[in-house]
Every structure is written in structure tokens, then in C-alpha cells.
Length: 489
Image (cartoon, rainbow, N blue to C red):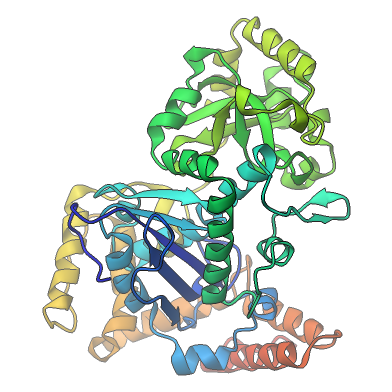
């Protein structure tokens, strides 16, 4: 099936997965991508896309990422394509009209890597998600919703007494063959196989979840003026509760029109009434490490739900009596907490003030990480499109007149990837110094990763892992030599 921009295109899913150099979507890079288009009945349409991607010299990967994926750095050198070529291909696949983009934890993870990759390569970072009838879903959220509300027909594995939603565990429990775990294409195939089982076991829930790809239904259910509790799926509620909780929508976010602030009715809402605004802010924005040390029902659990991220929400009546104990939900407590919140004067105003005053993150230091520092102007978007059009017409490089300083930097560094033969000596030196600086930055540097790699090599690991990690160590050493950044010892 060829990618098409026509809005007459039949609705389809595009299932995808990535393997990356680490977990930081603003910094780390995709080193393997795989995708498969299917029709709405989950039958494949066309051949899958599977690509390795070259590792840029300025990116220092984590040692753990290569140990987990077992992708050899030599494979990226021998078979990887440049990042700009990957995203040039992806925009055709992802911008195909009436596509629902879906993966396993994609909205929290992979989708952000796609956005940053598009942005770095002067392509529209958001267009594929919402234009031409396109949308997004996260299959992990659908799985959690199913496990919580309609588990019949599937096996739900438990590890150390707690339900797990790890894809490998679910596949094994449901007799789905696992081959090459953490290979992007293998993970896409496993995800699709489990999706077919889920759709067959719970067709009504599947159809309902598909409707949530559009904002309309979630917007209605999470309308604060309705003053009605709903069920919401989020990792924040914990696997022991199957990641679902009854919540009460309180108010719109003060700065982001498509986000709603909700209170977990199963959490300790008395903290709302016994703390000042400053103390509440501290409670709400405490670190994840602190949250994990406390049971969710012993802390105040307030979330911001993004309507444009296909949240899994449902009316309270879908909660069957036989599921209450399993989900650790006390109906009496829920009703009491809901009544307390609805009777609390100025609660919406208090929460809007707290979230409105939350300290904003400082602007990114380099252009590559600055996607969320501000939207790109219409004029610069037009300039990006012209730039790519000229490249498509056979021009090896074309200058561009951007107003946005971020795009000027990205354009200059993209030249080192697309048209290195046209670099001036000054441009070569600028890029050389840029790479050197990135290799020794404090947040993650070459020497720390070398040290971590060596430590892993000294542990009890498989032969395959040893080969991968040794190649990574050698790659880092060669990079250090090439860019004269000294030695880790």
C-alpha cells in the first residue's frame, strides 16, 4: 500500500516501535524504527518498514540502551541510514490520510521521539498527528483499560503479586511467540498479535477505545462543568490498581486549553483541606522517587489529563461490582470524596493558581532540544517546505532564510549530514567544536558512558551482550580520538 495524502484514503492503523539510545526524547535518537500499516480489522496493508539509523557523533548513548536492545554499533554503521532519510520516509507513511498512529506506550515515549526527529530535520513535528483526518492511540492504555474493566478472554500475568503490563509478559501469558525481544519489528508484530486477541476477546471495548482517538468523547467526559466522576487510565495510579482510578474533573488547566486537572477520588484528598497553597504545590510536584515510596491512597493524587493524547476514560457505570475489590476501589469512599470536593469553595481557582504559578522549565541550551520552547511561525514553516522541495528537485543543498534562531542552527547542522561536500572550512570547524562540546557536556558525556560500559562488561552477561558492549566501548573510544576530547582515565 503506497503512502497517500488523499483524504479519500480508507481509515487505517500505522503500528510502530522504536529502539533508541536512551530515554530522553529531546536528546536521545532513534537507532531502529519499524512500522506496519493495517486496516481496521488489523490485516496488514503492504510490507512493513524496518530501518536501522546511523548514530550521530555528537550523541552519547547510554550503555544500558545497547545492552537491552542488543543492537551492535557496527550494524548501525554498515546498515544504518542517516536520520534525515528516515524522517523523510516517515512523513509519507505517517501523513497518509485517515491514519491512526499507534504503538505500545507510544504517546508517552515514541511519539515524542518522532516529533523531535521531524523538528530536527526541518519537517512539521505535529502535522502527522492531527491533519488529514489523522489521530493517535496508545495500545498500552487500551490494554490497561481492558485489564481493569473487561479482563475476560485474556490472561493477565502477575509478577511479585502485582499485575504487569510488560509486553513480553503479556505475550507469553497469551501464547504469543516471542522472537528477538527489543527488536523494533519483532515488537510491532507481538503488539499486533496481542491486539488481535484483545479485539477478538473484547470487541465492544475495542470499538469504544477507537472512538477515543478523537478528542470529542474525552472532552465530554472530562468536562469540569458536568461535575461527574469518571474512570481514567494512567500509569500514575499504579499497576496494583490496574492503572485505573475514579477521578473528578475540577477545572481546565490555566495555560493549556486542552488539558484538564482531575483529582483521584481514591487518594487522600483530606490533604487538600489541611495544607496551604505552597504546601499543596510541593505535594503535587514532588519527585517521582518520592511518589513511589508512598502508597497512592496515602498521598494526594492530582493529574493533568491531556485531551490531545487520547486518554482512556469511561463512565463510572462501566465499573462492574465484581471488579471493585480487584481494583482496590471503595465506592463509599469515592462518593464521600466526590461530595467533599464538589462542596469545596474556590477549589478550581486554587488549583488553577497553583498550576499557573508552577515554575517553567528554562529554555533549552541547543536548538536540537528546543522543540517545546515555542511554536514555529507560518513563514518559517513555509521556508522549511521550500527547503525540502528544492532538495527533492535534485539540489544538493539550498540556503534558507529563517526568522527562528533554532531553525537557523538546525539548518546549519543539517548541512553537515546532507551536503558535507559543500561545507566551508569555517562551517567544518564550527561543527567540529559543536560535537566536541556535546561529547563532554555534564548531563551525559562520553567518559561516563565509557565507564558504565566497562562496568557492565565486568558483570555476568551473555556473549551477545559482551559483543555489543565491547563495540560500544570501541565506538566511544574512536569518537574520543576523532574529536580530541582526551581519555576517560
